[in-house]
Amino acid sequence: MDETTQPPDQPAEEPGRAARFAAHLREVGDGTTARPTVMVLAFEGWNDAGGAASAAVRSIGSAADAELVERLEDEDYYDYQFTRPKVRRTGSHREIIWPSTRIFRARPRRAEMDLLLVHGVEPSFRWQGFTADLLTRAAEHHVDAIVLVGSLLADVPHTRPIPAALSTEDEQLQDRLDVDEPTYEGPTGIVGVLSHTAFQAGIPAVSLWSAVPHYVGQAPSPKAQLALMRELEDLLGIALDVEDVAEDAAAWERGVDDLAQEDEEIAEYVKRLEEATDTSDLPEASGEAIAREFERYLRRRRPPDGGFGSGGGRG
Image 1: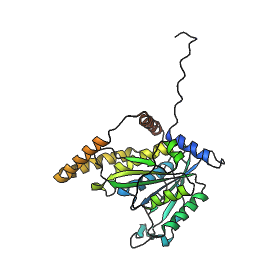
Image 2 (image 1 turned 45 degrees about the vertical axis):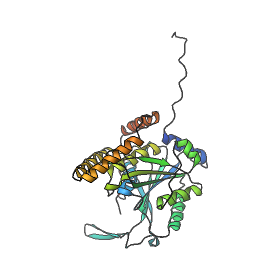
Image 3 (image 1 turned 135 degrees about the vertical axis):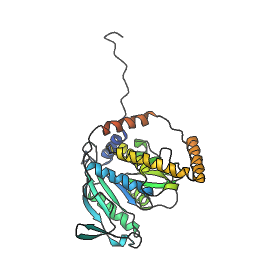
Image 4 (image 1 turned 120 degrees about the vertical axis):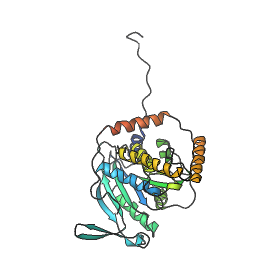
C-alpha cells in the first residue's frame, strides 16, 4: 500500500447496551434533560430467591453513594404477623423498624443516567394501590424508565454459570437492547405487577431475573447476586465492586459441593442438571458477549463512586 492509498472504511463500533438504553430514553422523553433517570427496584419476598435481587440493588447504592429520599410506610400494605417489625438497639436507644419501601437517589459519576433505587418488602395487601403509589412517586421524581430486578428458584446446577436475563414488553426496547419479550405465564409477584402496569402507563420497563438452584435456595446466594450485578453493570453503565461477591460466590459453590458429596441422591441430581444444562445451553463467545466483558473490565479499572450511607442495610 503506497502513501496515497487509504485503508478501507471500518464499520463504526456499536455503542454498549447502557449507551443505547440512555439514547433511547432521551429520544422518547420530553427532551428536557440530557441525563435520564432510571428507577431500579427489588423487593424481599417471593421475587427474591436467595436474597439475590435485593442484594444486587443494594450493591448499586453502595457503589453510587445513594441517599435516602423518602419511604412508603403505609401500614395498610403490610401484614405485620407475616412481615414483622424489628427492634434495633443503638447504644442505650431502642427503636422499632417498621416494614417499608425505601427510595434512594444516586448519581453515578461516569454513568449516562441518574438512578432512583427502590428496596423494600413485597407488600401483603392492596397491591394495586401500592403500585399506583410507587408509580406516582416515580412521576414526581421524573423517572424515564424502570428496571425490575428479581430472582427465582429453578432447576439449574450450582456448578454452572447462573443464568440472568433481561426482558421487556416494549417492542422498541426489545430491538434497541437486543432482549426478548417475556413469555412467562402463571402466578406473579409485585415485580411482575409493577413491570406490566408501568408498561401500560407508557413507562419503559425492563425486567432482569436470575435463577437460583432450588436445592440451595436460602439466602445468601452470592453467585446469583453476582450474575445480576454484571447484567446491571451492562444495562446501567456503572462499575460495581464485585470482587468480594465473586469470592463469596466461589466459597458458596465449594460449600455446596461439600454438601452434595455427602448425599448421593443430591450428587446424582446435580450431575443430571449439569448434563441437561451442558446439552441445551452450550456457551458461545459471541462478539457482543466479548464486548460487554471488555466494557466491564474498563469500568472496574476506575475507582468506585463511594459508600451507600446509613440507609443501605435491611430494615
